[in-house]
Length: 363
Image (cartoon, rainbow, N blue to C red; front, side, top):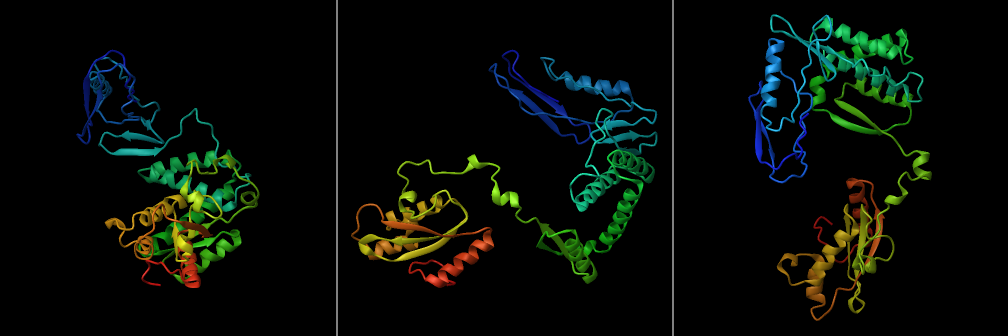
């Protein structure tokens, strides 16, 4: 890890070069004496033919720092098989130059994972276990090292309440799924995602069986529904947004609700000389941001940038003698949960109420 901090006022640029890619990176310290964290490099790796050259490589990098603040350490093989740990992997390069790798867990790391008796669903547990076996397979370069990695996972899971029978069942399911995925891999690349609400495990199984038997390139993604906790409690009650602007024109025009409300379908009515011309629209942003745009177009109807805006055209053609700020009434008609949902609600409102000011040519 490279931590750069101010020690003595100086200016220098340290260059180091990656021994594999040849890319050069540098750290520069300003002339002041303040502390600076420019960048952190953690868990660097490189290969040398012996320990002496490995230490020389570290010394070469450390010499780039005139203040001698860079301190690098070298990990040597610490077991009889000559593997060196790197992140979650053990690596070894044999005499033929072949790189061997397998799963690694730090000895001081507690042997804990998702317990078999936890209250998570069976599907969640199975997915977690399969993910661990997938990682073991991914970091292993051959079948022998894969077996070693798999045994390490077996030992960890048995320590957390899983039985040999349960693990064998999960492994068999994983193998079958792997074969199926290989058969439909090309189809999945052009497949569609189908979002369905999560009901229970039995229903989810029926979903997936139906898709598998149909042979259609569909991937099912299940979305959890609202829980009772979501309806009765609020985990962050103090995060409610409220208007902090004094004399907020959106709040003054709004008949009900907050100007910071997002995902809204809104209705604007002109109130100059009892005018009833109105406009309907939708926005994902805070309502205040969208209303400010309408307000500015109505306040500057002759500006070139607003000449095609509905409210600007209305004030320019219907109220050319009006002076002072625009008189607009704002109402929140509905709220959406997504882009499509919001667009549908806006379309319904426009069809049912037929606002006289509109800029949507499709209606």
